[in-house]
Image (cartoon, rainbow, N blue to C red; front, side):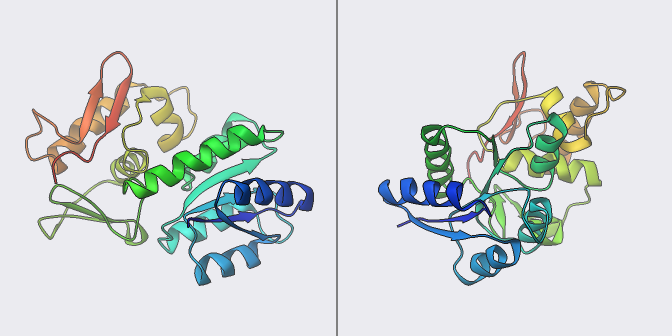
Length: 229
């Protein structure tokens, strides 16, 4: 049974979500504070964490940064009343796997949780070490190796690769990648993404001219695939 942890201080929302998840066959637990949520996640690692951003003791972003720094394997779905673009971009930049704004439909929430659980089963969520081909990524250490040797990536290259790896199979537009990795800045050109992808391919693809992992999506942007291992 997959375990879902709800870190939410509104008891009405938390209990409603817990009851519906339980009805769908999930083991669901509630933590009303950041401290309790972190303690629960460490003691009983869940498959998915549903995280409110406005908690009484710490911001949800701090909770998420802590989880990612500790290389917690759970997928994180942010559930927040913050519906502006920058809040969403910040959430994804610090490690969220999905973002849903309040008010929300319970059926949509359940569908998003189901999707994250399916990805976890398929190995599509970041673990302590993420592997594809000869590459290993250790998110907690911001370290990447190929055939056991360190790969020298610039910070933006690493952040771009990790953003793509955390959502395998998803087609990203250049603007979405710019917003997620660089933060919203209209002065940054979309070609910046192309240059960084070209450099990543040179460093992590066995054959940069025939990439297996960092794929071009015609007229859209890019996507990551695990490819042959």
